[in-house]
Amino acid sequence: MSIKFPFNKLNRSAAEEKIREENFARVTLSFYRYIKINDPKKVRDDLFFIWEAWGVLGRIYIAKEGINAQLCVPEHFLDAFKKHLNNYDAFKNLPFKIAIEEPKVSFYKLTVKVKKQIVADGLKENEYDVTDIGRHLNASEWNKAMADGAIVVDMRNHYESEIGHFENAICPEAETFREELPMVKDILKGKEDEKVLLYCTGGIRCEKASSYLKHFGFNDVNQLHGGIINYSHQVQSNVDLNNKFLGKNFVFDDRLSERISDDVISNCHQCGKPCDYHVNCKNLHCNLLFIQCSDCAKKHSGCCSPSCLDIISLPEEEQKKLRAGAEKRKMYHSHKKVDLRDAFNKKRRD
Image 1 (cartoon, rainbow, N blue to C red):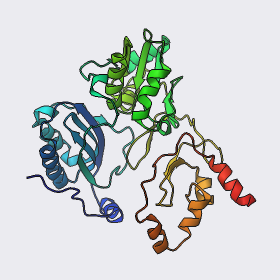
Image 2: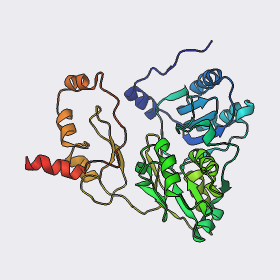
Image 3: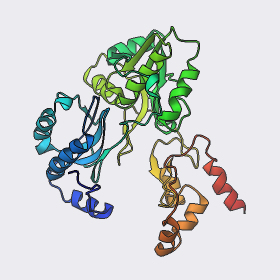
Image 4: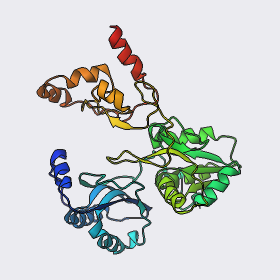
């Protein structure tokens, strides 16, 4: 019988304290695989109990179509972790993407969830075929294709590409992968016979995106094998390869990003100075993700707007009342955002 989830009982502050007391290293990694899983709930339960005992932390989605995982593993359990996955026919020899910058920790709890899809894409079953995907390119092949004038498309969301992307890449102003797929198809209309290069963080979104484009008549679709993470490792280990990625790679854990190059290609959303540091608004009712430099963080107490600054000045009990029963807010700053500088300037004028 399947157990009830979630099983984690530690709150964030208690989890942080527990991690600070650890005297061992962790390895942050990610992996995915599209493959048929007949009983996702049973697999979820099996993985959770073993990994929880080993102190594995992270976010894992399992569906009938496969698995998508981002996690950090205690280094002394890494071999056992790999052997455990290999016990499942569906997960044998999974290619791991190891983090480019290894922090003390990137996650604070273990979450293993059963989902309808491992990546929400909104596609109908007759709009793609994951057995018919684009050609996988390594870093050397990718650089050559770029040099030969191929069309490069960023298959991530706008807040990801804002802080880092490949040279001359098309970066759609999309807030979700679901929104981006038809947008990219429209952008590329009329270029069905040209070479198209797709990339994302670790490769999973490009599996669906390349299949989708091929279904709609694009004849030369290619994707970066292992995504930005694998590309960066290849470039770092090969002196003959030039890095064509500018800035930082956005990641979906507490690190929020990994630096790939020294280029800073974005700006603070509040003062406009060069900055590529994402933060969440200190008003927990808002929790908006935006770019804020250290000066503005100090000046505005980590808030994104005057209204949020007012709210964090309230007693904690009043803040809790505002959060109670509140509708779910968007985590990320829309590309249609009101300029944050204007908001603070207006308050000063008023």
